Amino acid sequence: MPTILNLNEDQIAALLDWPSLIAVLESALIEYSVRPACSPVRQILSLPAQDAFFGVMAAVCRDVLGAKLVTVYPGNAAHHLPTHMGTIQLFRATTGEPIANLDARLITEMRTAAVSAIATRLLAKPDAQILAILGSGVQAKAHLKALRLVRNFTQVYIWSRTPAHALRFAEETGAVPASAENAVRNADIVVTATHAPEPVLSGGWLKSDVHVNAIGAVGASRRELDASVFENASVIVESREAAAKEAGDVLLAGASIYAELGELLAGTKPAPQNHRTVYKALGIGIEDIATARLIYMRSAGVTAAP
Image (cartoon, rainbow, N blue to C red; front, side, top):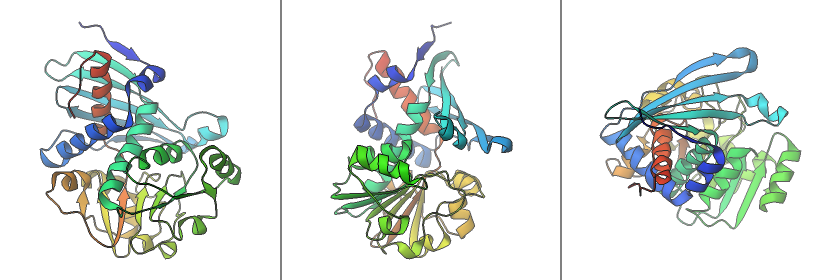
């Protein structure tokens, strides 16, 4: 049996950068939508007493296969603990040999925001300058970093259900705190990254050509966006199959899906033009396994092709 590589978050951080991650995820999304890749919808074990869940996300990515075991505990924020924690286990695809065990927290943080950056590059106006973020936690900060790689912002607005958190985010990043409505009113790009089970964003507040990255709500009964956000909008997802089971924002609005991100990247579907776009993020296993593969290869001194 081979020696199993174990990497903690600090070691992963030293091996992961945004540009390489974005390139690898673009290839993984194409692989998922076009080839197709083996990446089934995650299996969920609900924990109602904690308003939490445990998920298993498996995939094959080229020469590796693996699974992310992830816990999502929104209440952890009150205890100064991460809301998302987990581990990724990698195996050699040809033999099934276990080869690596990686902490999943930073991988989840960065790959989520990196996929939003891909969606934003494809869908937002090229001259977009105003960003609004609803939510002030880990994903809010990661999205600000990632989206700045694909658009040049002259102003960033921040809103949080906890005003003190919005003020702290503003002090750390230079963003301007505002009410949710005022934050998004003139925004070219909006990110919703909360744990809210009910809408925090109304379509009546938005410009007609805004691009929305909807990150936070996972589950058929949860949503951050009200139905009016989807009026005259093109909806983009990572996986139609996953959205049909988990995208409460889309399902409760009765919205139709225009394309998967991988289809837009591969050119099998044209990017929608000149109206509102909504990218509904859920996260799929191949994103985690492709990211873990990149880290594993870099740890071995091998340059990973996108």
